[in-house]
Image 1 (cartoon, rainbow over the protein chains, first blue to last red):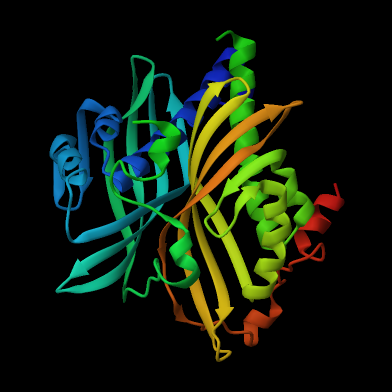
Image 2: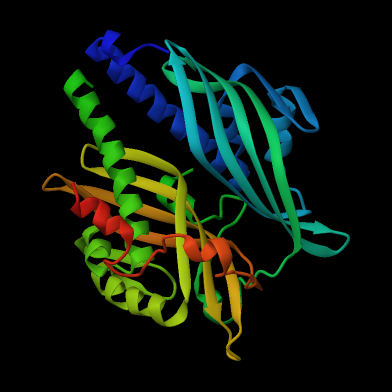
Length: 177
Length: 174
């Protein structure tokens, strides 16, 4: 880590810009996962990106395909990231980011609320002006599994827009495709 | 962008995140004035249970929360912010909330929920505020209420839905 007093004004600005861009990269990863947006997901990785995500170990490419392919047993997902911590060194960076993943999973004909808490341990690279993920390790810290008790359609809840894991999600009206 | 524009863009990004935080503070403290501060006067919301002028929504929402929830605590994260110009941005943010509400027979339920906010932000007179905010529900649950008030729990400072909350003393003491 460089002491702030040793850095030039431009160097400081570049650090702040890099950390903001890495925060955006992580938010877009959540968007790509939760909307199953393959174009967005592909754009977030270096061409030689590596992953360790449970059953997926090695090249990120099979993970990218699997995570953005419809899965009838996964009805909803919500990857909330926070506690973003980054160290930037020129065009490379490392990061640790907390994630709480909430999903509704179909298991043996029942709906389960699955909450998973963990962290991403990452290496990032800036390529052609864009920060991308070169390596991501998902560290599992805890999980909870409860019978689903969601009410998304009855009473007052009928009135809300609902999230979807595809491009019919209302967010595409804001961001475009 | 030149250096000056890049500094301003970085500060604009922070300013939008801070307003997103103020919205959450305002809802949890039932602070009507602070809630209105996050919206332009001609702002609009599309919240399903309320579609219309944002300041009228604020007037509706604060009493709605007080009447229907015995407790509410929100936490936003995962903000995607895309600038369309120096004075306009679109944004999505995730919200993980926890609330408690009485059922018709008076039993309290714990009611966690996940939603997303879909926003248009505009900078006018130097201040970023929402021109519009939409709401998308992703998940909720209804769990037995298990909050305890005894022992060590009774010793903690408690949040309040008023300016009695300790956060106001912190800001007042600056």
